[in-house]
Amino acid sequence: MRSSQGATAAAQAIGITRAEPIRPMLPPECREHMGRVIPKLGEKARWTQKRWEYSADQVDAKIDRCAQFHDDQAS
Image (tube, rainbow, N blue to C red; front, side, top):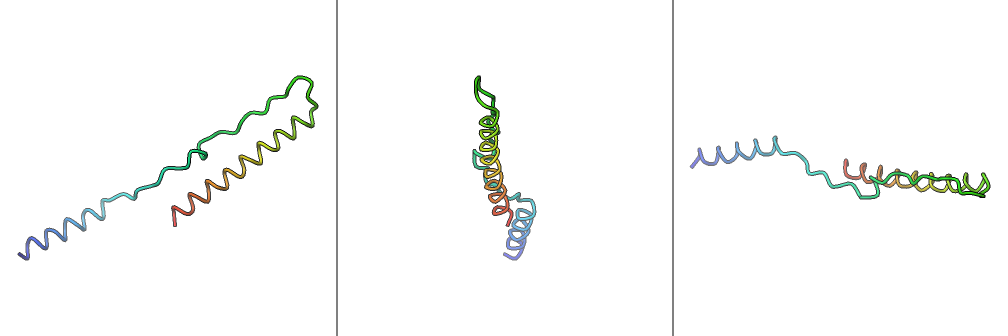
């Protein structure tokens, strides 16, 4: 009986040391790229710039959410 308990304990110890942590999948939004802002015919430059700034703000917010997800999973 003792040898089977020792073998079981050894197998559990080996399994624990070889086990890799299961990492959750990133949210789909974390893999999306920033949409391109292409100037439109007749559009004033400042409106193109405003559209770009809005897109950049959205991407920055997404990066913050993805980083927070990663930090939460690491802790």
